[in-house]
Image (spheres, rainbow, N blue to C red):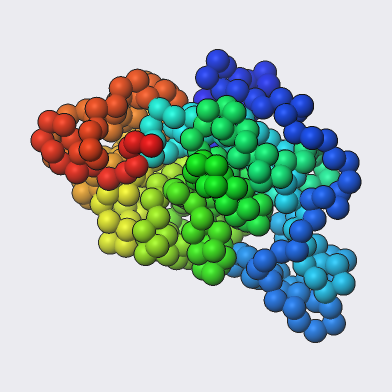
Length: 369
């Protein structure tokens, strides 16, 4: 099971529930999805400059930005995907993956169309690389999202699958509705976002997972169609905000799997974020525009983990390899196993009062609701 893939009904097992379409009131009027954007600047001749992501698209009247989900109408910029849900599932929080945030719980997971990059390996390209009109959707206002999360016994709403940066307004409003109902919010994001927008939108999140796709600008330019530096800045900003953050690094054979890149990555994390941020080295599967490469060999993932361990990171995981011992959480002091996982299931959780029960070493994370 891939960690970030949106699932069709046929893919769902007993632990993964697709929310039925009838759960949402059907609205065919596109105006219900159109809300003025919060992060932009008006400039001359009815043009606008988007201030959401580092692209800073300058958009003329009746045109859209790179993401395809924001449109200039007469000099006012609008998001076209507020409450425009194209995917909703009930997933284990481990599927995001969050390993240090409420393990063993379920997350009401949702997405709209759109993305602000174009990763050649995207698992969810059929919703991320399309315009809103090109994918079936349902009207799901923020309060109904919170109600559904509670109905499905989810303590958390997860914004995921496509790229939540591009539906920031919806995310912020749904998080507010969730918090009013006692439901928390987490986001799974590429982190390619301007600082002010990140502080405003992800400031409402209870935890953040960032896909750090490589540690080279060339990879970001050629494979992601983005930039590395703004993502690193976002991670530092989240650190300063005190936001619980985990990092996933998808290891793609021949493209971002050298010892030098692994070592550079983990040294940067150690210096700028500290040794306690969880890092997940995830196995690549051929998807979308990268079907010519093989699945990441497990020894490559183990090599990445060994380098990170040797550099002193405390919580280094291997992802998308069900049953691997590196799915478990171990105490960095006494090395006893504290959380046992198999695939997306947390079988055993021994952490008590945010500490190892054997040696009392504090274990960072959010372990209990």
